[in-house]
Length: 408
Ligand SMILES: [Zn+2]
Ligand SMILES: [Zn+2]
Image 1 (cartoon, rainbow, N blue to C red):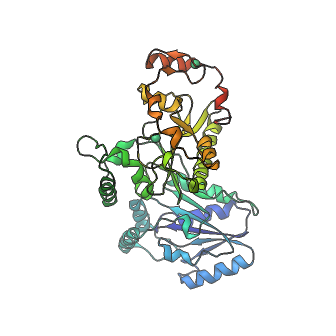
Image 2 (image 1 turned 60 degrees about the vertical axis):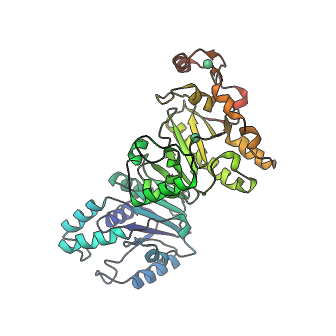
Image 3 (image 1 turned 135 degrees about the horizontal axis):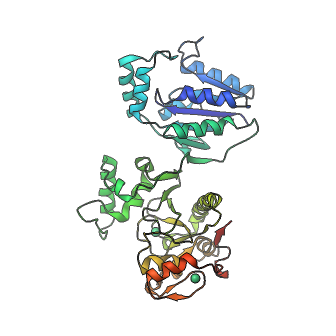
């Protein structure tokens, strides 16, 4: 199936460089449709681009649409139904794009000098990040030169018959910047989300010092992942993947559902089974990725019976529990007792027309239980003892965990 690869980015974001890179190494028949040169080497019209793209696709070639395409409407006509539709979003800092556009002299377009800065800035205000709902099967977001290099390689090495997995992808693991970073952010969208969260629930604990409410942080991210790019690893229309702000193990990510009004696994009805399956599949993908990087890791995927934060989220957590953020009995027991509901169990209860209320209703009692090793089952007197035991315990994980444990 021929592919339409739509580049989305400001002038100076590196679209030409991207095309040159892919065309240089690719064995796939690509045609670059560049609005800056389509008119016999001079700048042309969108109509000319559309007709050139249609011609190439009819000949079975894949096309790269090399124009800014920052607004949804501008790119919609290029989403040819018969083609496989991809987007590469060159989301580089505006200042960088401005300085490149201003500096450029031998560029094919005519956007030069002082006028360039004004044009880029105006365009930057109108950027609409691509979404799967527009019809893309894959969106790759690049935020720096390294990301761009990575996607050039990815598309460049794609043979004529190869395809790529669908979804929304950042190219790089994002560094966990901690919750403080986005607690400090006060964009209008944040304030709006906060007001909304406060209206939704009167019982919310407030962060000391009048900050925003901690337990709605996930809700805010789920509603507007674009506003929280510094912590989001991946998102789609249905879910957002983030690092846990206080990881309780070496690897600990959350797959957060984006549907409004769904906060805990007990709320989930049978009609949401497809959603749970999707969250599970995404969690599994991340667990496998981490296991590929470190074969000693094992993972469990599951939900807390009574979550401490709003917005349904699946914990994907490695079973080493090697983390300075694991600080008390409740932390430990929330991952090592039936308070932690394995994702596969939550799904199979729904498949059997039960819900997850019965198993989560009184689960809080588990949090105050003794500290028991999740591998060998011995009880330790206190947390420091438990932690040093965990560092050396090599007992196999109990049979109960089989099928629920994801390992190499
Ligand atoms: Zn949680
Ligand atoms: Zn043990």
